[in-house]
Length: 96
Image 1 (tube, rainbow, N blue to C red):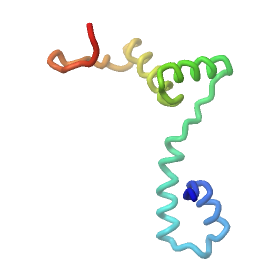
Image 2 (image 1 turned 60 degrees about the horizontal axis):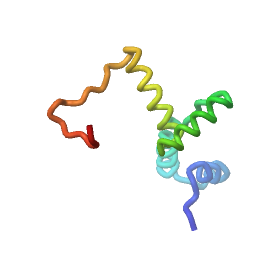
Image 3 (image 1 turned 180 degrees about the vertical axis):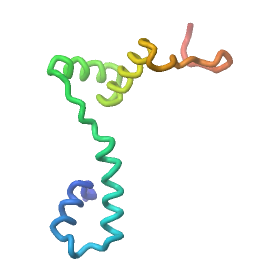
């Protein structure tokens, strides 16, 4: 049997709020906070979603990781972020 997810636990606690200790409630809320904070709520037009899904699949990345990668690349190329430079003495993978 798999453990219940955070949303299910919160629903159960809400139904039995008088029966749960303050410490247990605090633990559950602290676990829920990062999940809410990190929830990916970026929605795109259908054609963009399809292209994003195809690209993520091709590169073996998750959708949200792909969005982060694209935004970072765009910001670096448009000088909003410094370009990530490799140290000259650093080893790299692959062949030249």
